[in-house]
Image (cartoon, rainbow, N blue to C red):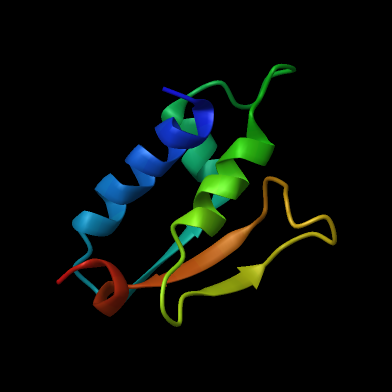
Length: 84
């Protein structure tokens, strides 16, 4: 399993259990939960890519650095797009 797939699996788990109409996910928090952050050998680019990969419908990026990848990427995922 790639690092991107690991992050996607954790994100899918979070989105499958949404109670409110939306959930905001921050890349640094997601990476800490999966492990390996902060550290020199972190996988933040893969974490952010997983977050972008999981976006659907009208999900939106609320915050991101100019590069699009970093510890403060924040995405709002809407329940209607992920829980049927």
